[in-house]
Image (cartoon, rainbow, N blue to C red; front, side, top):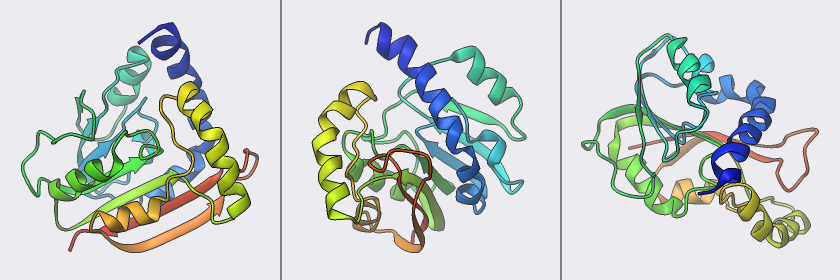
Length: 204
């Protein structure tokens, strides 16, 4: 950890991620009951959860912008429990503990997304829903090649963020039944960062 990682990057991340706030409510609309959010970040999802959410467990290995995050947690309409833990290890929850699991702009930076998704599926109740809003690999081969070329730099300056992960394939490989998947390019952003995946996977 250093000054950039601890102080500068969290501010940049919070500022840039507010630019996609309009994408959050549609992604979170089906969340219900007890929810696990993996990659809580600075809590930008909190105002966009629907009234059907009863409780949120917020998982993230980093604690940054604490006063700002505390204000957002205090304004939430439901209890929020924060857990400082990386996602790609065994989660401290019993099997089938949650009605919904959520990731937004998270799978790009988890070192081992396959392990993380397997754990998310384990703690999700049968019939529960995994909701995701992620950026990832382009279907355009030219864009995908640019993503691969830029990725080593992106990982260094953006907290380990990968540009070229095929999100839909990762979700299906973890055993989720993908019921809904939207692919679109976010306007006013570099194409290598703007390839979006928004969807829902179900645990059978």
